[in-house]
Length: 220
Image 1: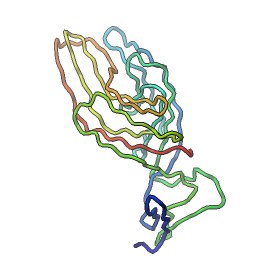
Image 2 (image 1 turned 180 degrees about the vertical axis):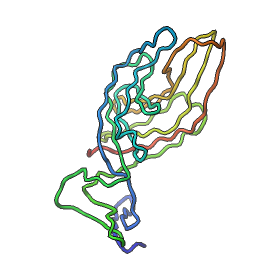
Image 3 (image 1 turned 90 degrees about the vertical axis):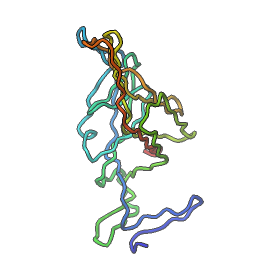
Image 4 (image 1 turned 180 degrees about the horizontal axis):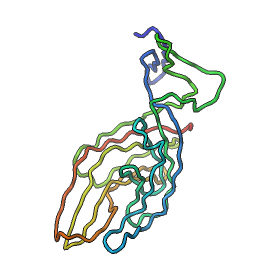
């Protein structure tokens, strides 16, 4: 038992914040839009819409959770859409390992450890994780999650394989994309780019384990 902190007992068990407490804090909320459709790169390759993330999102110490009303995905330092997708509005919640006073109240609760380092402040909008899923390393066509009525959730997606296929010199790459429709969050495997290839036929699925963190952002 830690010597610094507090415990709150409720119907779901004991909530404890003590001197060893660690959490991610909300650093920013970023809005991004995508035009959808198809982007032409001459005669050899077409892709879905692509937009680079701002620097705060590409920070290596950040975790981002997304809420989007049409299909989007992540590729390197960019938000991407599948070919032929519609317009999208995306809200991105950026959580950092550095404390940040998201709320500006002059009253609240602060907890420090035995080294006088603040480990909790009620002005921090801490990352409220409600579910975690590990979907494995193999190909999954689709997945969905129902959001409870009255709640607002954002989703942090990690990993997920991608596919390169060529048939009679026509190639395409496919990735995982996600969206929220009403209270249903969906993940689907969709085409991001189409290209002309020097190779006649080829197929490769690059495996990567996929994990999903569900974050409650109702009060943000």
